Length: 607
Image (tube, rainbow, N blue to C red; front, side, top):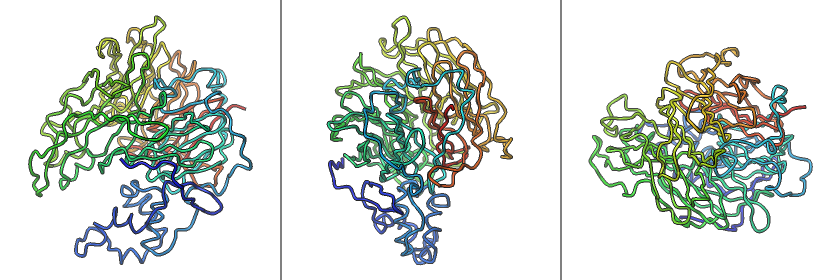
């Protein structure tokens, strides 16, 4: 574990913008670590050698790392790191504003208020129960006002093709991360920029807001397996820690803050790495950590697979094959304070035989991390990407890749009973009994399921109804919204997805085009309304009573942004909308396996 507490944070001066950074990037060191294998070995013929790359412009190198052939390698770097590599290769610094706040700086900074006193949204689900339901008091938006929502401002993420993170909002401030690793503090009503902080890698988690001795802190993770705490007023780093050193590890589930501890889940892309037969599959295992929120020090770590991976054979190229591996945790942890438990939902195994903890709901002791109980809902699911062709890494009986991407939701019914609700990529949804070690109370099929099907990122629960948006990408009939009664598991209504709105903008529709009706993104509910983004770039509000669409906005266009960064919308297919104090915020643009990229944060309000 590598921890920095109270370090002197370097300052990056860019075109009049001051941005705190996690650490000053070293372009030569980053090139040696990330690029030298392919670009310095004579005769390898895998990529242009460094001498050839030096003839290119820094902007061309930066473009290759941001949107071109090296985009996967570039994702491992922050925006500052990519620019440092481009400068090292070419000997010249790229032009332009890397963080995108030269234009649109706030004229004045309001005195810091109590971030936890008024309307707010913190973390993934708005509360530690992850119900993605915003009360009327916090929402500040009534059903009859939704039809009058208009775009108030748009913010463009620079030098990126994806809008990753989900906003946190409190006391008139909006905090959001980006694929570039930049954390932005914006004015929630106008979008002007207060400060920025640059992490060491891209940030796709939501941010959690918590009190500290002399103010408030923001907590988040990056795709390099690191977790951070920064000051909410200034953006200055409090601490950062690498919680997992596996090269495929990443933090996708938003850290959950509870009573002075930060609970963190770890996922990975090793099942993608394993599609390359020269990669020795597989050694990663998912985990949950409890960190001291004040210092970042680890209190406990629990792995989803007890035993470490061990050699299990040799691949055709001489690579060592290992296992067991997998059971990554993609979603945010859910807190059950009354029972002293933490709930997570795990992913598939990468190797056979599939472990008993894959595709499961797990309950862990908050104090010790001990696994109290688990319920595996899909046994035998061993899967890696790219097994249509022969690959020694592939399980003999692969799939069905029906792991969990959504977080479990803890809900208390009107009769006082608690249920743990979850949706799966299989298309199945469940209510579990937390007092009977996760026994199934009811189950409801919301979709057909596929590798990119069923419930992908999240759903909303309002106390009586669960609202499930269905992806079912890769199937003939993607999309659809279901309302299910929590007491019984019976359908209340079903709303079929409308024809893809992107086709009206001249975008080709059809299978795996990114212009279809699949609903991958997490949904969010307020009293009377359910908000849902779609793979077609449409952002819709549904009546919570009937499912009817009462408002729609087409994000498939270019936007004039408050920070002057060129921005365009695309698929809305990961993080969900956030509603606070009469405003609705949503990212548009997520380019991944059948979705279309974009780089804009949109803010809607009522005149």
